[in-house]
Length: 324
Image (cartoon, rainbow, N blue to C red; front, side, top):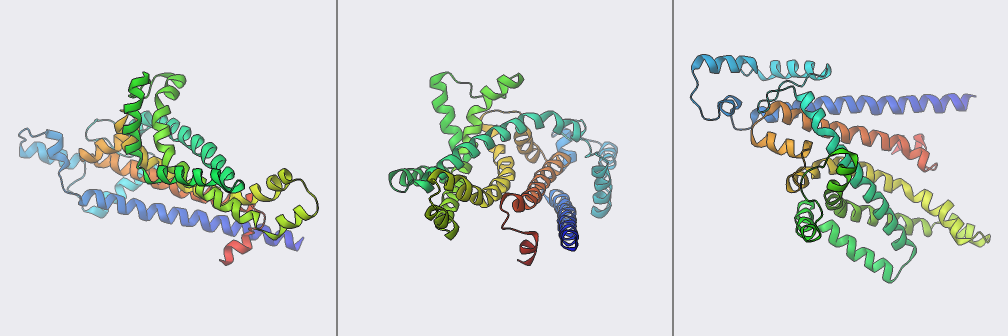
């Protein structure tokens, strides 16, 4: 009973500490993002007028509307209060609430990221297992292929894929209509994203499988006459999932960042292209909201990965993790 209570208390402390760290990271990030955007060169009032002459009265009204006349800390706390209630302000270029704007663009990007993640997991883990279990030609082929894919930027893969797809009549622009249309139009962007990240997952999976194959408990299982397939399934693949899940978790935020250039190349109207347009047009509220969204996704996914690790690999106890 005492042992059970101890483990429970340790788990609560671990989760509480991770959640507190998440909140602190988000607060620090929010201030850095807010301050960096406002220190960037450019004047949102000038962008609003698009070069047209403006009277001092009109400039003063716009400055007051966007609180540009207040000290930076006052602007930050006002903005943070709005964020905590779901109000990210109004877009300078689109003249609508940022939350509404992001909600309109997010589904397409979410489908694209999810589609790419499925391709990465299927191809990356599959090729990694193949290379780990089959040394020789298969291993070398996977290493060469994943090396090329990892070294190729996503936007370069996107440009090459658009050129190849035009000859086949495959749609290369836009996000499509409906779920089926989204899948068809987002196939090439998802492949462009998956090439680089899939190579990384394949290499991590290969290294983890090779490491597990050399463990003593695997040799012991083989010596007891357990079939090779059963040894691989029970003792190798399960224990190799730990580092693979970690790299896949950190990959999610990387996908969100990489979608920016891929969405521009394929003319996908998602949050990636919205971020590029907002940075170009000095749309401070949208840049702040999207940057905070990307950072929050990265931190939350890493928290989930940390909590899942002891379930994936029982050897990683909470006590052991805390002692590191």
